[in-house]
Image 1 (cartoon, rainbow, N blue to C red):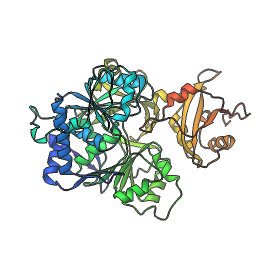
Image 2 (image 1 turned 135 degrees about the vertical axis):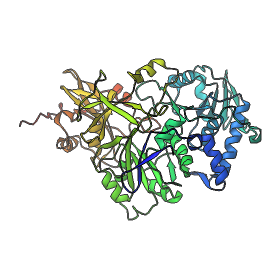
Image 3 (image 1 turned 45 degrees about the horizontal axis):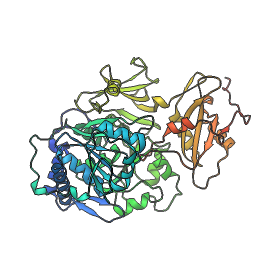
Image 4 (image 1 turned 180 degrees about the vertical axis):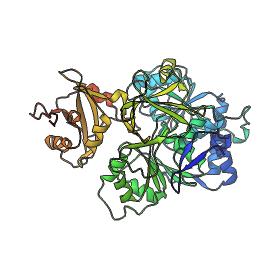
Amino acid sequence: MPTIWLKLSDRKEMTALTDMPTRDECVIRNLIDTRAAEAPDEVFAVFDGTGEQWTNAELLRRTRSVAAGLHELGIRPGDLVAVWLPNGPAALVAYTAISYLGAVYTPFNTAYRGGLLEHVIENSGASVLIADSRLLDRLASVEHGGLHTVIAIGESPAVEGIRVLPEAALDGDPDALTGLEQPIEPWDRHCVMYTSGTTGPSKGVVTTYLQGYTGITAIPTRRGARMMLVGPMFHTSGAAVVHNSLINGGSLVMLESFSTQSFWADVRRYRITSGVLVGAMATFLLKQPEAADDRDHGLDQVVMMPLSDDPRAFADRFGVDIYTCFNMTETPTPIVSEVNPPIPGIAGRIRPGLQARLVDGNDLEVADGQTGELILRSDLPWALATGYHNNSEATAALWRNGWLHTGDALRRDAEGNYYFVDRLKDAIRRRGENVSSFEVEKELQAHPGVRLAAVVAVPSEHGEDEVLAVIAPVTGAQLDFVEIITFLRDRMAHFMIPRYLRIVDALPATPTNKVEKYRLRADGVTPDTWDREAAGISIKRDRL
């Protein structure tokens, strides 16, 4: 067997990156063929809002049809195929069909337009794009690079300089689809995933089937689980749910987006047993009024990234097992917790088969308890991202001194537990002290009236930085700036308490719910920003 399960309790917990899995265990084409042969009538996918369901046999038929259509358009193994679609049946089958051909799934964020859209088109080098027709007017104002053909899902508007084909162009003859000259291997390129671009132009992360497999199997999913797919298919969190469901013999429910109000109703209606809660989703759910049916559902486990402020309260209230982890598009879920982690703020421990160091700016290791950048290596080849597509400079920066540099600051305790501190580029330096925006945000979001908070550095007239917190309140909540400072005073060090506070209806975010902090930094101290020092509130170090 390619995986060794380490027993931390009566459940399978953490997998070691040791032996190479077989094609049948991790390659999308093989998994789809096997499922359709062994359980053709089992439901694989349910689409929210339409009532549409696909069995394993239907998934195979649709996948082969679209794969045949792409093959007729000249797509061959190794070719990048761009996809620009919202979640739905077309997005799912684009992913499976491109994978089935051995081509490289290259999705674009549906929020892209202007210079960022032009950048990913040029960087990808893709000649064929499958796109929602409602997005195609954005192509008129950008250069098209090597893109020459668009298959429009929906209407087929004209785009100057590009051949636009109707959706029917993807209705190929499944029986005419021939076998591959070479089988798809675990180490072959599977995806080019563009990062969210919150701090600059998106980079295309090159991932293999093996990286996807090892990342998915890091956290146990019960055989036959029904998973909630709420992350977009242009993000790892969405595509990984499809891969996971194939690997674990389960099914998925594709929802349009996460909704605090409808979350538990969706879980009950679709009999969902497993899900992923990213960012502040868990906090949003906990801040909903308690209800008599809070435990009346079938959800068995969730993965929280990061761990909520009070995971025990979530587990006790909703009766759900919790895991947490540290991961990024470039890595195979290298840090994983045990079930229901007992330590607040923990990310977990390094998986066996991975080597990890926390280092300073010169790649020298820091001591336990100190903050450093997490860098990684793997005993198993091809388990980490090989680099960035068509970006040798960024690839060299990623892989320095033989280690993959995550760009994330963590600390490790003496027992080997890791704790996420911040993105390195989000760290704040104030009055000679390093401030973690993540830690300040966590304490702000513990306030009952705060729905979401983002903390950024703004220039200080004294040199270094000041701390600005931008807050989105809970619906109906009336926030008082002085009361917020009082709330924080006993919860964090004096130098971490924000000088500036601003309240907004909603924080700017990518479609994957990552706050676009670069926008908040660019806005800086706006006219509606409150300055506690100008209000006469000065917070000093406690004298001991």
